[in-house]
Length: 273
Image 1 (tube, rainbow, N blue to C red):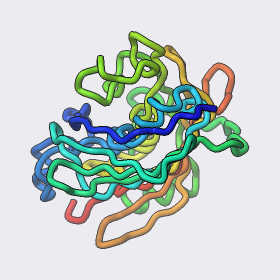
Image 2: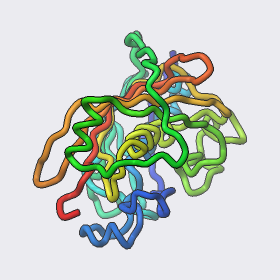
Image 3: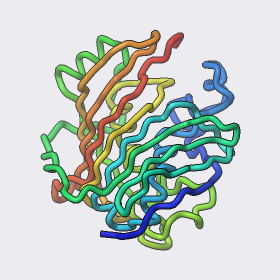
Image 4: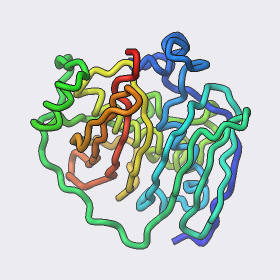
């Protein structure tokens, strides 16, 4: 295990998803809901908070890292941000991400536990098919998905998706995550899988990723085919927003070995939508 302490850092926010089917990442729709512009994806914000772990702990983080992230306020494209670390040890830290206006946008607890929990086992959920009809994310439909189960998603980690890098200049990515280096899957992609499998089961537009608790079980190499299985654990309303909690488990398709498990909380229907 690494003996290095992670370090605070600064960067410029990058919205990789302005053309996403979730139009909260577009300026036009985000402004309709009172935001200054399109929201940088919550999974990208999460990658900024785990960036110090990758830099300090390398493969230890990719193989066993754990993080709890809460996104509290929007982060906007091109905004400068600072990730300040506290309580840093050789295998853990707390982090707060603050934007150029001093807004506390997100925070996290990041560590590499000495003992991994028991990994999940694949259920064998039916898989989403290309062109499959997706129901609108009404409360009734979400309850059906909770009670009857959900479709799994097949995904592939390679350089042909928009989450290959979370920094505008891909040359500044950590060596292990760069496609000119290790080419291992980064946090924005891995947590992005939780979004994509949920969105593959229910049409939500716009919707907002709020928080995750995730545990890595092994690094994901370039070219890996993955299966994501998803289950709804809770549905509730708060301040007229509709919330969903899901558990997403990610496996290597060829072996069934677990790569990551994550709990996601999202607003699937915003007040006024």
